[in-house]
Length: 279
Ligand SMILES: [Zn+2]
Image (cartoon, rainbow, N blue to C red; front, side, top):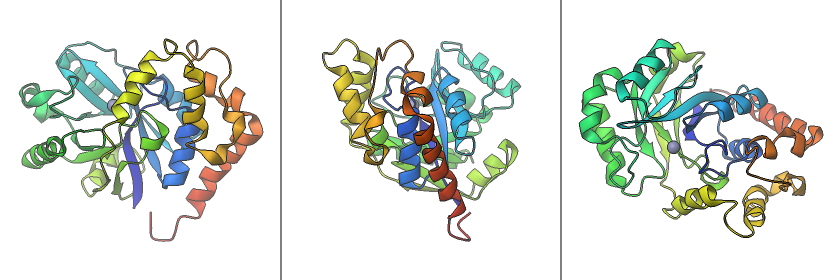
């Protein structure tokens, strides 16, 4: 079986603090074999992260439509925000993406699709997110699971991580798959694992959106990106203006080739040393 966190944001999402290093290091520490990087309305961060860790990343996108959010996997062409739901689905279907609905019935999140809109497209989506670790009311996840079961849809689980400490909070364990064609059949055999994150993590997103407007933001971000991954050491410290190039600012150039090589080596070692029968 492989362990996948099906919903992670990088700092290409304006409300996320996750540097690529932090994402990869957290995946190593928490034994994640794959992650779905599903930034808000962009695949740029997922593509960049896939270049650095090709075996780890499934390129996804969380797309805001005029009727709530979709989450898509194996996205090749970015779908813009604020399209009508039908058009967003048509664009994703045309490129062969796997289409789902993130936190579909979450009552405290205004981006959630809600039952009414969801029922208009339920026959045209491939899965529902059955467990979102950022869900505040556990009953909302349970209702999503029940609805998926009712309609014979498989479910994913994901941390919806906007900060390194959240990564891996929720995941699925499922048989390995080789491509997007057999992803869904593996997902049907998945087991959900993990736990809800502390509701205070929502403040992290607010804080991330406001960075640059808050005094000492660089210091706070430094702490988030070093303290939470002590093995990465002090060369991860931030430099320069964090607002201009949010992704590459934390990226390879700042990290140093040696250190980056060691990160990738760790990833490969982890894969090689996976116990027999576990994949
Ligand atoms: Zn999300």
